[in-house]
Image 1: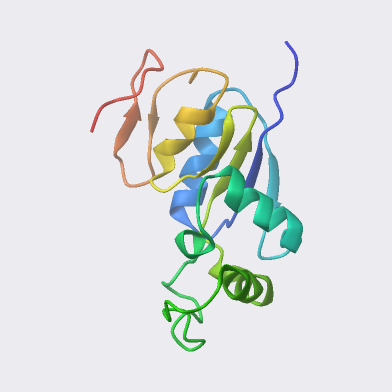
Image 2 (image 1 turned 120 degrees about the vertical axis):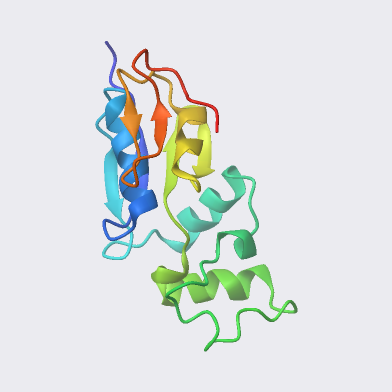
Length: 144
């Protein structure tokens, strides 16, 4: 089988990011893991990810546990460039996990959004860290 190229912009401290990574692996895919707090994407790559995911820079901004408020990023008059500048200066502001696959780019919140862009089926059951069943024994997505 031809290898499948998947990239996850991952934060190992984040449960949603860990669950997303585990679902990629449950499909038999070993992704390229970018710990974006250690190795942030370049400005050009970040802008491309935002565009390919169909998001705006504001939609990718993370508020919780970040310097969002102290930098006044809730100000609606800030330009997209200013928001990207803030994410470049403080990568913790980039919401996660972002997953790049041959089927598209998605911000995987909730983590099961990754199932929409995986080119391989789940190989077995999967439950999130909190116990929520996402994939059944047959590898099928469980409806919420």
